[in-house]
Image 1 (tube, rainbow, N blue to C red):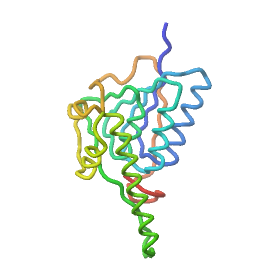
Image 2 (image 1 turned 90 degrees about the vertical axis):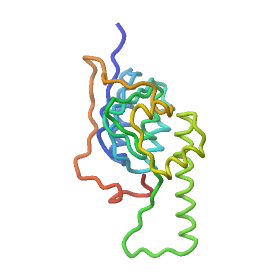
Image 3 (image 1 turned 180 degrees about the vertical axis):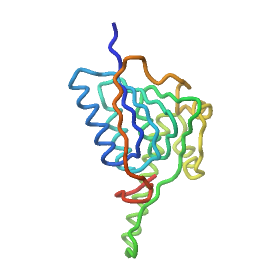
Image 4 (image 1 turned 120 degrees about the vertical axis):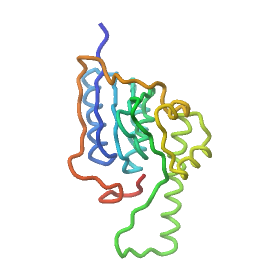
Length: 199
């Protein structure tokens, strides 16, 4: 009898606490001998740093990772979603791609060099995000970058045509599988209370 996958339900923004919980859960389950994971994702996005880190972590694991959009996967949540070698979506879902923004504290003053540094950082983050999506979908970096600038939203059929998902599937996981929830309790604003660049 084959081992059931471990299911992680990520219904949360992409921030330090939720990504730490995700990686910690995977670490613990792998110590227990698990090597098959289904990551259910519905996320408004969040921190570029944490999204790219989680993507690299998932892609480098000696494990089978399936990601499944069960609602909305927005902005940097798309990068987390790209961490799956198999990528699925429910029929009533969306994917949202858009550019990177940088938060400024009230009354913050920046010198020219600091502004240049911030702009360069934004461009690098945008390029890294575009590289991940391009590598996942087979589209060019230029196509993906333009899609981000255009703030495109994809339904599951469009996401499949894009190469972002492999199949549209209602069933989320097999009966009897362990489900571990990662939720975020407090109200979340993409532009409030987060360090660094956001998407």
